[in-house]
Structure formats: C-alpha cells, structure tokens
Length: 394
Ligand SMILES: Cc1ncc(COP(=O)(O)O)c(C=O)c1O
Image 1 (tube, rainbow, N blue to C red):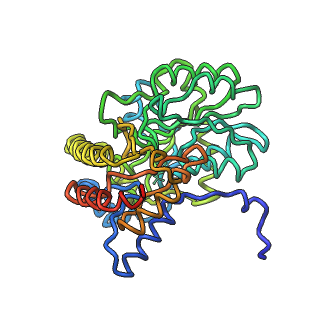
Image 2 (image 1 turned 90 degrees about the vertical axis):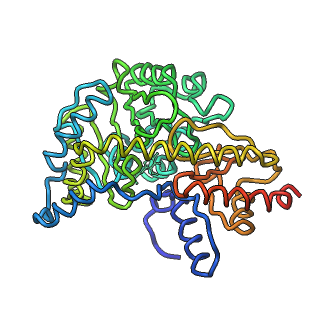
Image 3 (image 1 turned 60 degrees about the vertical axis):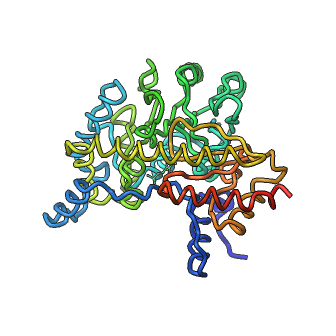
C-alpha cells in the first residue's frame, strides 16, 4: 500500500476519460467502436482560429505571459462577456486558464474552507463533487430530476441552503442532462446566495450551444454579478477541446488576482499562441456564422439520436435544449446504469457513460454525446442498439 496523502482518497475522477481509454483499447483490438462517451465535437477548429495560432507561432508568441492572461485577449473577452451577459466586465476581472476545468479547481481553492458547505447539481459535471471532497469541504448534492426538465428543485434548494453554505454551483446548459435553468431558478439561486452571503459559481461552457430559445446567464439577475464567478471556454463553442483554452470572469479584480496567483503557482500561464488564437475566435467576422453552422449541425444530430432512443423499449428521454448530450432514463429496462453501459459497450460497440459517473442521482440514466459523430454514424449507432436491445430487455 503506497503512502499517499489522505486527500488523494477523496479525489474523484471524470469517468469519460477512462471510458475513452477503454474504447481506444477496444479499437486497437480491432473493434469498430462508436464514441459517444466523451463530450467532444468532431468538427475541425475553424480556419481563422488555426491561422491565427500559426501566425502567432511564426511571430514568436511562444513565451511566458502574465499569469492572468494576455491583456489583449482579456480586453476582447471583457467586451464579449459584457455584450452576451448584459453586464459590464473589465479586463482586470478576467483570468485565462488552460481549458475551462481549472477554473473549477481554482474557484473552490480560492473561496471555500474545509467544512464549508457547497451546493452542487447531481447528476452534474463530476469535477465539482470531486474537488469539493478533495479540499475537505462538505458537498451538498441537489438532485436534478428528469420530471422537472432537470431544473433546480427550488423547495429542495431552500431546504439545503443554510448559514454554512459558502458556494452554490450551477451549470446551464447542463452536462449531463441537457437541461437549461429557468429564469425562476436563476432568480432563486441569487436570492438564496444573498440571504446566506454565499458565492455563486456559474459554469457556462455551453452558453453558445442552446438549441431552443436564448441563453440566459445568471449574471443578468440583479445582485448576481458581485458574488458570481463565471466559467466559459473555447472548448465546446469553437470545437477546441485539445487547445486547452478557457477563462473566468470574477466579481472583482481582487478575486481575479487571487485566481491569477493560483495559476501562477500551478501552471504559470495558459499557452501564449492559443491566447492569440482566442482573440481571432471572437474577432474574425466569419466566426458567428461558423458557430451557428456547428450549432445547427449539432441540433440535427440531437434530433436523430433522440428519435432513435425514444423507440427503444424501457427508454424515455428528455429532449435537451442545450449542450451536447442525451440523458435517457433507462430504468424501464430493469437494469442498472452500469449494466446498460457495459452491455452497450460489449454488445453494440458503442461507448456511452453510466449516469452514475455524474453522481449518485444519475442511477437509472445513461449519457450519450451526440456531438462526436455524423448523422449517418449516429444512424448506424441506432441500428446497432435496435439489434441488441431485445437481449438487454431479456
Ligand atoms: C460542464 C462542464 N464544465 C467544464 C468542462 C471543462 O471543459 P474544458 O475542456 O474546457 O476544461 C466541461 C467539459 O466537458 C463541462 O462539460
């Protein structure tokens, strides 16, 4: 038995990466796997972004940068966030991180003490629960229920919140459920955070991936801005998962400075040339259309996969209004999430995730990403599922 620090036993994991590794191994063994496990698009990163990165490399933008990020990029992000969220953001309130995920770590490290309570969505992005436990805080899971469209249950939220609540985490549009929080939920979160003087962490990495209606940020609710850290990233919006490019908007320069010092102590800074590419992503005039085209293609893929799943016995699915996942209820099959995941992997050569990868309230569900495959490939996945389903139902 190795002598690891105690905190290591409290660290969870994002299972998508482990299932991805398992599926890659199956491919090396000669199996034709369909990847629906990892939340990633198969699109090329748009050309203006690639060109800007190549130009930056040629221009020797290959050195250290200030930990908080390139000022030219922070200026662009401040403008973009101000316009999209209806607020006033200043460049010095922004921090640039290698991907969006580090903001989860940094926010919890910066704001939450051991023993403090953190309310977080469950099923939800697994890193929240993992890092809450890791830092010795008390995770308070708010169950996201399919019957209310995976919204916050406001009575439950009020019951769970108390004077020890230090932070409330929300993610809208949501991973893994595809749900979008209503205006009423956003308002209630702000009211409760104010009542208990708690911080809010709003994970908005799917802000550009809303299929019906308009994205609403919690920042548009009066009183939210001064207590909310917002995470957004290039990852999903611009099909840039491997570039590792994300950012946080802090309520003040003081908070941003603390996060920048955590960046300083861990990774020094996000990569230089990717930050120059990040400017092009928001500034190049062709980009809004490129993003709209990707979103439209994703909507088509969602609709095809949704229709296919609805036809399977024992499966019922909420139509996601945002993000890139379907989160069907499979309890009607009489099998557990883990069973169904394994069965689909072994019998249909499709990699999905058990709902329990997203917390205990994910039992009874599986998650499928509809972003990784073309429509014909999704149709192939549906055919495979239809072929093996009678054996699962038994
Ligand atoms: C809700 C949510 N937050 C954060 C992230 C992290 O994104 P990144 O790859 O930019 O670190 C993801 C990625 O799947 C996500 O789904």
